[in-house]
Length: 128
Image 1 (tube, rainbow, N blue to C red):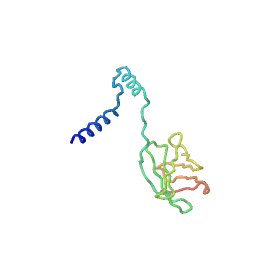
Image 2 (cartoon, helix red, strand yellow):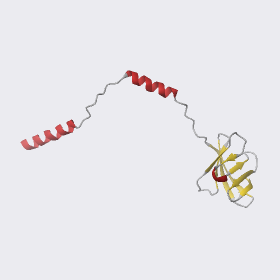
Image 3 (cartoon, rainbow, N blue to C red):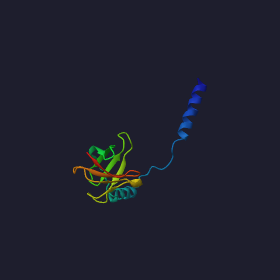
């Protein structure tokens, strides 16, 4: 019984010795600086959402998938339904959307056919 009590006390003493002994003083000046930094940060801009997803058939009889985005100057292109999207972005709404590796898209969601440029395939007209 005495050994159990001694070993329990030694374990408790070891556990307490491992506690963090640092100072927990709150500096009100630091809190104000953090609040100022949070208020002066640039506003967060959310990415555009998908407005419409459309399927197009191109002149070479291939099928493509375009997700039109809400900022009216970008779209996501997929050559297959389960493929990873390639983002195409225009400098201003209504201009040609450019993507990586030679991808480009001309046209709009509501205005009939689009023209898609792909590496190795050139420009093709696609109808939705």
